[in-house]
Image (cartoon, rainbow, N blue to C red; front, top):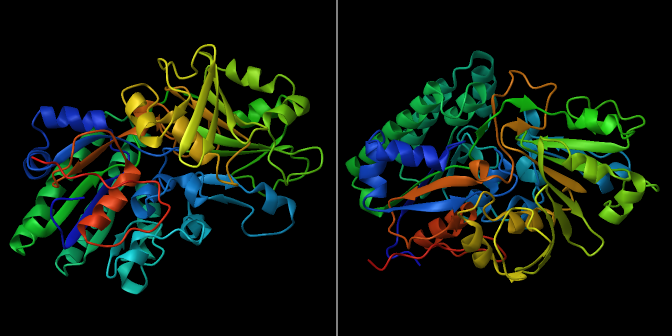
Length: 476
């Protein structure tokens, strides 16, 4: 439990901020406000985000304490096989890129509680998942989409960052108990240029200045000592040199795919392909008796013999996870294979020969903390646990593909072209900064842990059945 109660919690989400870039900028002295006000008196933790590591679904752990699979929002795009098979329904498929982003909160399981439902007076800024933030508590309910389209068409994402800061400072002056504020600039300039392009790095340094202004506002109100301030990210990014088209791959093998944006072309489709962050995708297959059921590996091998092996022959494909008849998943890579199954909180993980992630020996049975601790410093932190959790969503794919760094899985209909991608299981996408002025025990954390940590600091009761755990106060 945190060592002291707080009356204000502020989460500044720097979309797309990489933990290694933050560390390098801190070491070079280019983030003096984050260093002085957060790192030195508080804590900077090694943290991982959720899979898929993409904007929107990866906000859910901060807002609900639950992973995307637990929320039944398994990606930025998804395809609900059962709803699709049953006839017309607005909930058959989704893309949260654009106007459908307004559906994200209502698409979650109704029993999942957001921070806005639990903390009276809490505020949301530039965040699409604001269920419970009624009226003016959702500060950018309507204007968010205008800012996004304006910045997308003009490449002026610094304009939206400045607007976010102005709105955040205006809300702080009203002393709300909780504010969640999104700053999109780092992510967008990474996509447009490179994760380490000078325009991108300038956004990190601007963010540091924003932290300084927020701290000064809190000090000016006499509220700094009672405030918990978090600087976090939902995912990292990696530079992209090659785009691989999963739709073409499937088409060439007699499996024409339904995909965005061509959602009105449904005739004759035998698969559906739903890309998230461009670094991962959910693929769904029509069974011989229709779409309603998930297609497990044993059936897929009969429908499309050799398909999984051919996928792994593609340089762009790093990891493939496919549902199996035992209620778990088979994980494959060019390194090896394994089987996973989630039994409550216990993860059963058995390799067949070499490990698909290149891990050293792991116990066959892992609890969540063990999985994170044993894999945090590898190229695939927390990957088995994240895959297993995502597979619990009925809307998750029959097959999940995670791209090789340097590649992505979307060739067509991406304007402007993305020069950096995220969404995959690789550390460059999964490792994120988690920095706070609270003094917490040092150790690996998940982004889902911020939710219960902030609620405990505010003396708000935690809902049951969340995936995150409160981070413990440092004894020092």
